[in-house]
Length: 358
Image (cartoon, rainbow, N blue to C red; front, side, top):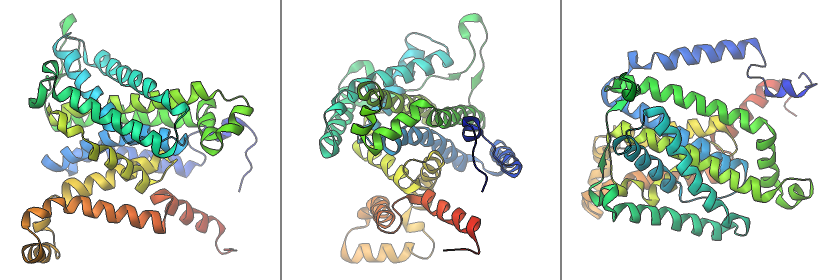
């Protein structure tokens, strides 16, 4: 194994030529996905990318900084509603509205990060939980946000209508390429950040905040910054989410959604950007595809319906998604605490050290 001699060897994207080739092939595959998938499947892929952005941001907070949040659905909602209102009421262009939506969510993240200076563990979890529930109920009871009826997303115009140039994206394929480009930018930005001084400060706080402070890491700045960056990612994702579904209503952003975000990063692997993406892809696929209609599942569908009719009710099958997620998270915590990324690291280590396994 080659020894790293300078910082630039640690931050470069492609350490080997074959890694660059694999990355290019993978990018080519991503940009050709609409050729292989259509309709509802492409909609799920768009959702996966949106949730991946949220999970990358949440992993910066939880996996890299060691903080905790069960209120990220609140930041997600702030970004979605801010995007709709900025484009419909203020008529801002898409790019400007997207950035401002993320910044508004980041501002709320900064405010929520202030209690994190004194709260830890379950106390911080309760504080973030309260934030998420408060946002949901404020949105649901305010006429400006459409109340319980929600809001319809405006046409996705990525041009500058104010200057006479309009470019409306109406199909899932067109939205796919826009979301893919934004997702790639956000992932690369997170990767660069974690390799830089800011990311190393986050990791130092996670490992031992007292030791980090003794070594010059300003806890006030970096803890609140971690919350703000994580909320910014959730806000950007929320802004894209409203265009994926074309309609938003307050109870889409409930506590369960925040918990699902946590499940995604735990399954993918804490402290791993790629783990966040893999976890988001796996859980979203399970929720919206494989487990969407339990009665139509291959092999087990009819058996589950029969068991439900005999011992419970068929309506109870709607909760089967949550039951499966609970089982998955329990198995991950018991057998692979580092998630899918941990399994990958173990496999890579085995390949690099084979046949010397000692």
